[in-house]
Image 1 (cartoon, one colour):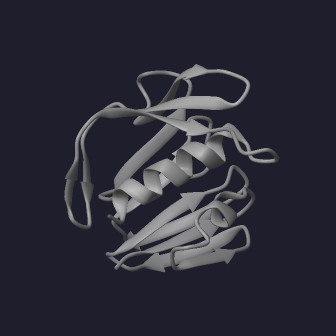
Image 2 (cartoon, rainbow, N blue to C red):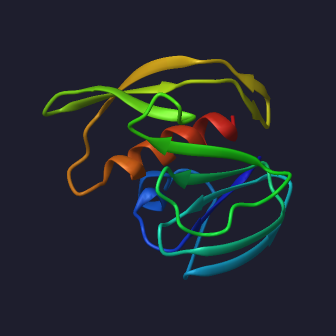
Length: 134
């Protein structure tokens, strides 16, 4: 089973409470091939090995080399995007295949309920992390 590491600001870790989650401040150095890292906008990460790093499309930190990168945002150029929204539901899209712990997740769309108090990035990061560690 994989582990999720949430670095910096954001509330995605609260959405993943049924999974092994480590939350840490604004800096982390990670060497864990089964880890999924969710990087907050204010975070700095040094990734030696990981399954994937999830970032907001506007992430301002240094991006890791040689590690699967999952970008989240409104553009379909991102790995995960929002394709539609209503007051109580978002439809999230996985726009390209991802290597997961169990194999490969293929492109898909899935409706998810809007959870009060959580940013869209948190919901996209939760979606991506769950796909990656399955």
